[in-house]
Structures are given as structure tokens and as C-alpha cells.
Length: 203
Image (cartoon, rainbow, N blue to C red; front, side, top):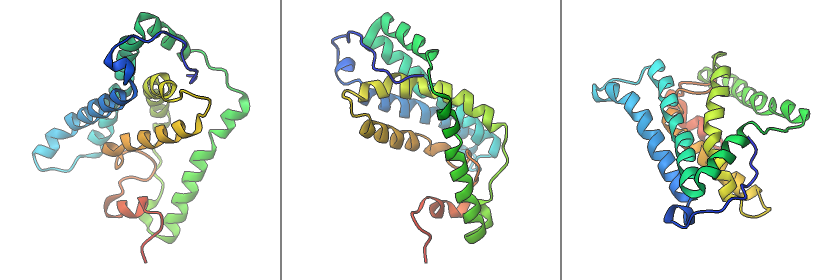
């Protein structure tokens, strides 16, 4: 989905005037409540969240960015905004070299994990959850309805896209907190979780 800013008339209401803040508030609230609904039966019994339930928390979270993005597009831009949003989902024009660039993040992540496995702890050994590749395609599609389909065009009001992109990336990362111990190629983190996210290992 492209991040082209829709040239559409905005409605005169509170959400239209303050449309970015409500998006993140509703997305985080809805997604985290969805994740909690899946984990609650185990937590209320004083149990740990099993691996499968942890993975199922993520589909519940996906309703947040997608549903809120569609809802606020309808509220702010009306039916013409929804048509524009849906049309942008299939309007992808990316040079072939950028697809090769997609390999850079997983290669870097694997390199870091293998290094930490060797020099820090075997707990960082990469998992082989290959079906996660398919999950990534599905999750990416539904997430980007909100992140890039609605939020980023609203955040990028000028030609400077770097600062909004960095901010959106940080918020996107924080959005994953409820499932941080169940997703990715190094899970669960267990007692080494703080070490995984620290800038450098403790002495």
C-alpha cells in the first residue's frame, strides 16, 4: 500500500481536527484488549500463557489498526475516503531492487541473534517458525490498512517524511508489547528479556 497523502476534503468535526491521536489511542486500546481477552482465561487462573495462546493474541490485535483505520477514514473523509483507501491497497509500484532490500532486516536480526547465542546465552538461539513467514504476509496486510493507509498520510503533512516515519516506527514497535514474548525468531525471552532489549550487556 502506498503512503501517498489522499487529497480529499476532511469533515469538520473533532476527530477530523485531531485525527492522529484518536487513531493511536483507539488502536492501542482495541488491540491490547483483544490480546488480553485471549490471555485472560489463563491469567485469571494464575497460569502462564501457553505458546499457542500467545500466538493467538496477535490475530486479536490485528483488528486494532485495520478496523480503526477503516472507521476513522469513514469518519474523517466519508465514503470517498474509503474508496480511495481501498484503491490504494492494490496500487503498488515498487522497483524490483526494493524487494531485495527486504532481506536486509532478517539477515541483520539473524546475525545479532547468532552472535548473542555464541557470546551471551543459548536462549537467544533463533527458532525455526517457518509458517511465520505466511503469518507475516497476512499480518502485514491488515496492519498496514491502519499504519500506512491512514496514520502515516495524516502524520506526513509536509515533504519531510523522515521524522513522521521514525515516530510511527517507534509507536508500531510499542504496539507489539503484549506479544513480544511470543513472536519473532527468539522466543521466549524469559529472564533474559531485559538483556535482549538493553543497548549493551551488563558487566
